[in-house]
Length: 178
Image 1 (cartoon, helix red, strand yellow):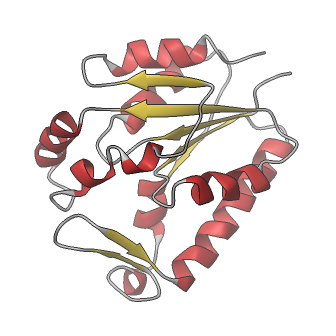
Image 2: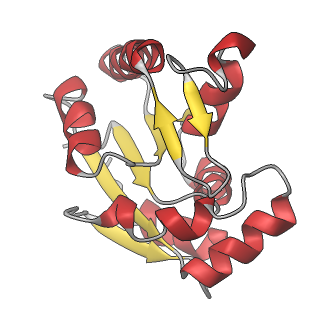
């Protein structure tokens, strides 16, 4: 079966976005990518920091409300529709809800061939990246490094602690079926 969707799950600053850019270069076909960061950036300002939208606590905790969830559900279904229409798609997500986060993707992607990828990174390394980025609430990387992988199983796992994005992308690309 031809892989139609690659779903990357990892904590903040784990290196998912870099891997996605490298995957887009090493995979022979065009693979558009959709990520949680670009989704949050696309939200109306009124949903950032609001109870119904998304809030970031001073310690790096993330809370989402009903309006965020509704828009996120629409995005998930839309991405699945693109794959069903013939696009091969990469998803960059953070499964803060653990197994429930994956289950919503499994439901939307039902019937499609999906490669599930776990992107791991030592929490101290991710925290250092978080500081260097300057666009994250401090503590987010450390708090997410392990929790997003609890109860998860993957087709392939990569660890960016000491491995560059390009090498991780090559490992993932080797698992993509044509």
